[in-house]
Length: 288
Image (cartoon, rainbow, N blue to C red; front, side):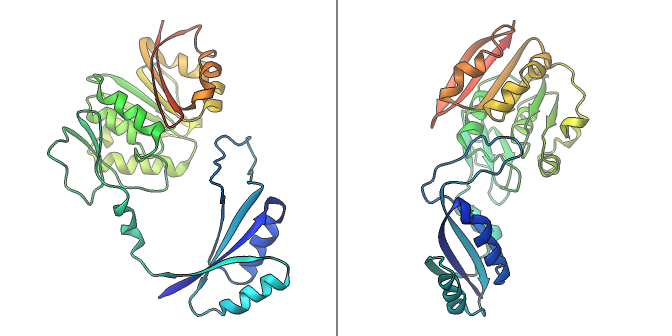
C-alpha cells in the first residue's frame, strides 16, 4: 500500500482555490506548509494568516491516475514542483524515533509509555505525543520543566493555565503538589490532560476545565505556558490567582517581548529569575 503526494508552489492569494482543486480531484488530505520555515507565533484573534509563499500538498490513493492529476493542474496554470510516492508505515509508532525518554534537571523525566523508566528517573511523567500541545520537546515547555525540577512542590497547590497535554500539572503532582487545576481553551486538551493524569495515577488530584468553567481562587504556584499576548490580556487574573508570596512562572514569551510582558505585572509582582533558550524566555515572579 502506498500513496501519491503532489506538491504545488503557490502564493497566499491562490491558496483557497488550489486547496479546493485538490479536494475536487479526490485528495485524501491537503496540507499548507511554509517552505521558508518562518513561523507565525501570534495571529490576530479570528484570523488564519498565511505566508506570502507556500507549498500546498495533496495526498492521493495509490490507484489514482496521478499523471492525469498533475496534467490537469498544469493546464490550469499551477506548477507541480514535486510528486512523491509514500510507502505505508506504522504511523502510530513513527514518533518513537524522535520522542524518547528525556531528562529535565536532576530528578524529572518525561518517558513515553513504550519505554521503561530509566533508573536515573526519580520522578517520571508517562506521556505520549497526542493532539494537545506539550511533550517537553519545545523550549517553552522544557524551560518550565527544568525550573520545576529544582523547586519544592510538596503540599503546594498549583494552577496550570494553558495545560495542553497536562504535562506541567502532572509533573507538579508527581513532584509533591497537593492538587492542581488545569485550564485550557481547547476541549481536546481537557480530554488529554484527564487521560494523561489517569495514566500517571494522579487523576484524583487534577481537575481540568475550560475557561468558562474555571472558578478562580488562589494557588501557591501558577504556571502559564502560553504566549505573550494572552499572558498580557489575562495578567490581572493571573495575579489574583496567586496566594501571598505565591510564585508565577510564565513561558511562551519571545526574548524581544520581555519588557512588554513584565510591565503588566511589575506593580504587583517581583521578578526573581529568568531562563532563555532558542529565543524563548521563561520568567519567574513572586507576589509582593
